[in-house]
Image 1 (cartoon, one colour):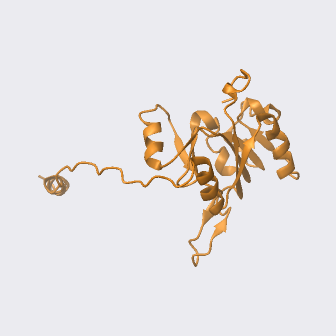
Image 2 (spheres, rainbow, N blue to C red):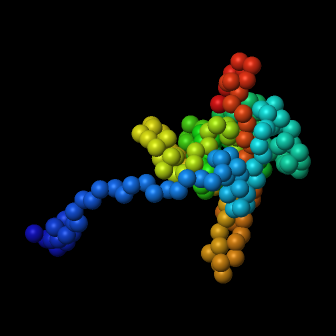
Image 3 (cartoon, one colour):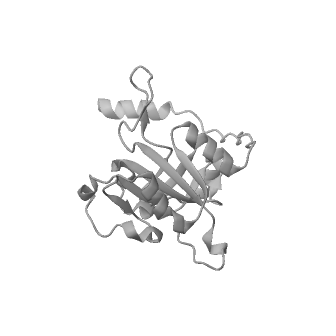
Length: 202
């Protein structure tokens, strides 16, 4: 037996026994999910807009970012900015990226997105400002709820995004936009599928 096999055998022999997973001990939220989501996200540098109508999103983006030279969207409902076939390197000059989220998490202000939602995986990380569209009834309470919701879903890439890019590595001084978007704006819209029979844009 060589030294590698000897080390691996020793590690295998020293493995602790299996134990049962602990019961979920998450405390119930004191406020409804949307209010909690907004409070937490804004406390970490994000901005939330509630009761937004789908047709208002384009105007809101134009008002928030009047100097933006390049705005792109992965959502057909914001079709004036929609992304067509392109290579990742062509997004290096994006000022504002508009993406959709599958759901949000109230306890930490994060949203869950997958490669299918993004189309261009690098998009929410390379843009200067990030706009996220989230349905009002797609906010869960805790990360336990989030993982239950993800379950065994089939996706190649998924990520939780919470607010703008931030770091406090240097002297514990918080800096926003150090290695990603300078700002994150979440537009919460009502479930359109239940309003006047209008198809759900998601």
